[in-house]
Length: 35
Image: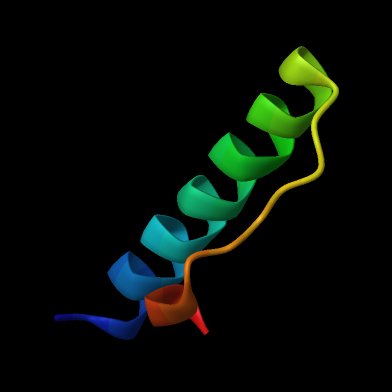
């Protein structure tokens, strides 16, 4: 995969997490596999 595509995918993933956090007002608990 082109590096730019990976960067966009990661940014999108992070944005989704942040949005979900703000929308739910929850503390994000990452699964062990995400670390």
